[in-house]
Length: 214
Image (cartoon, rainbow, N blue to C red; front, side, top):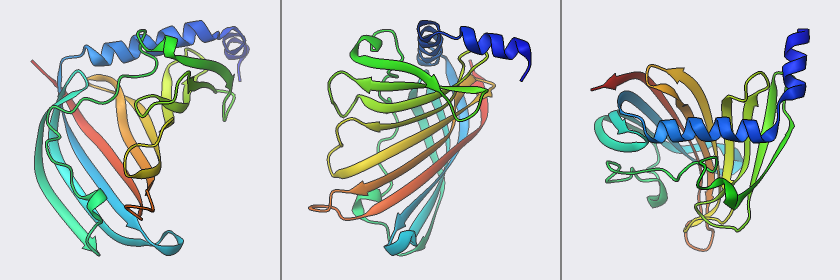
């Protein structure tokens, strides 16, 4: 690592990183219309992690800011056993708006953050823990560049398990696109509540071909 990189790393401070992450989150929320291609693979897992059944779902979609405003199904390809009810393709995805980023300026006071070492010298981790457990308030960590605090990955789980789920974890990988810096890979691992829905699953969504629309 160069001397300049080491110096920048030493100067990286949590308040600056949180402002950077918050500015990026708010910019995405206020963004215009963006069209993209979505491919999602959902897999139900059996004993030893073997895949029992799966569905590959392909869409052409649009978001306005972070709200899904168009989602046109192109194909659904099932394999193996039919998926459990918990994993059936969701309806009415149009209009769906994800939970607001914990780094948004209006939500930051509801979390405790820390800046710690990352997996490599080029990355730092911002850990986040809600002051009050809630389905909409995650705990986890963001991987940010040591050079400028820009987000690379976000790894979180709800601080309170959602209905029908025993556990769920999510990983978001961010990339620069024609519509700005956005999550282009989303991975989920989860387990249904054994009392009601006894199933383990994982999914991977890849978003590509981003194109701003007027």
